[in-house]
Image 1 (tube, rainbow, N blue to C red):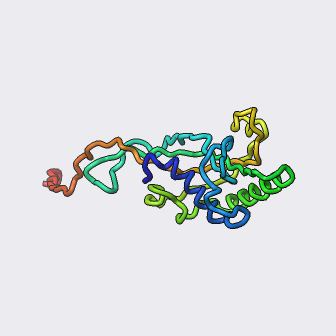
Image 2: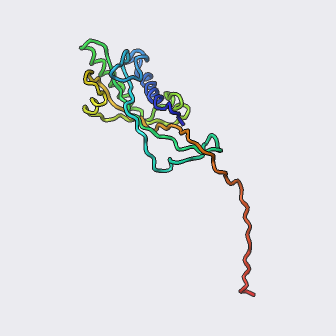
Amino acid sequence: MADYTAIYEAGESVVNYLKSVMTPEPIAKKEHIGLCEPQSPGDFQLTVWIYNIQQVRDTGTGTGFHLDPDDPSIERFAPMELTLNMLVSSHSKATAMQKYTDEYRVIGRAMQALRDIPTLPSEFLSGTLAESKDPITLAVLKLGSEEMSRIWNNSEKTVCPSFGIEVSKIFIRSERTRTAAPRVASAEFSVRHKTDFTKR
């Protein structure tokens, strides 16, 4: 089960995957891909930004206390499940003639790469997500122009080519515990035969 760092680690895991499939073409260096708000990309040519975090409400068996698999003497509260929305954006410092060519080539490859993997490969998972080995699912989102402008939320900046992805099945371990109830190891039963007096 992942720790509280799972939100950052999910973003970093997506970045790790993009670095592996987008270098050296169409992006020359891995350090030009990273977690960053799209309004201030710096030297990044491709940015990943977590713009929305939602807790998944579980009304079924995933609620309440459960026996801790690592310590049977305690019960641990159910983990928190999150869904993250991320914005992937491309950036270029080239001249006007070359700028959009670069940006659309980069964003096209990013969309292609992320659409091809419904589950993020385990070798790209970071930190406690890698330790938990729980599969993380990915899906490309449909974002309209109005919603995209709202996400950017900065009228002074031109909206760069971008698309959204949904990253789900993020589980964060709870620190809420209690002593487990004693378990019945064995039980003894005695059987008493009832006498039928009607046959006498």
